[in-house]
Length: 81
Image 1: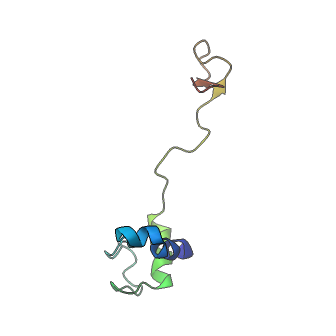
Image 2 (image 1 turned 180 degrees about the vertical axis):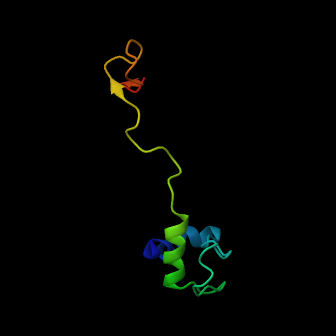
């Protein structure tokens, strides 16, 4: 995660839009080196451990069956209707 965060900031796309890593100290990571110009690997690791979560539904949670209109056990058919 540390490498991914650093890599993301260095991409041309992020540079073009002025994208940067969150520059507000993250709660729970105050004991790690952090300045506006420099973020330590320890801080990034702490951030990754505290701030990672799923934002979307896990894939494969909707049962797929032959005909979702006639079956109460499926949500969608094989064509996702």
